[in-house]
Length: 94
Image 1 (cartoon, helix red, strand yellow):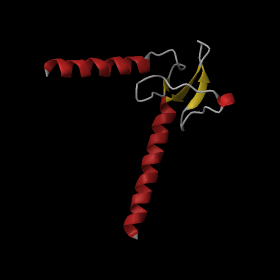
Image 2 (cartoon, one colour):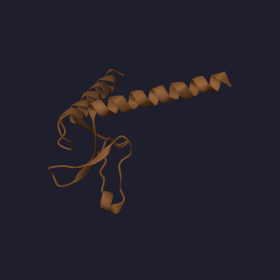
Image 3 (tube, one colour):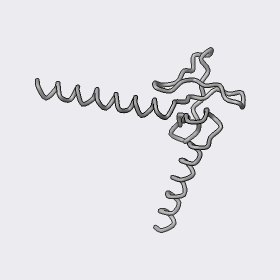
Image 4 (cartoon, one colour):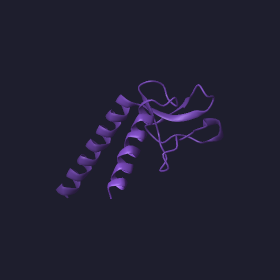
């Protein structure tokens, strides 16, 4: 059990360090991750687009990745939560 907990703690830090110091996106931006933690790639010309609020950003390695400015991501999440609260409130009134 101890090794399993230690494994998940190490995995948690590796993921967060990768997100913070990745070369996929510009400084202050975060890359969108798949369930397998691989970086999400995009190609607008081929019709492979990013989900909102992510944008397709061309990186130094020559590939394009789905990236979002960290501040914009927080604002987008707050907006979605507010919309959900308003929807819940309107459902309660009915």
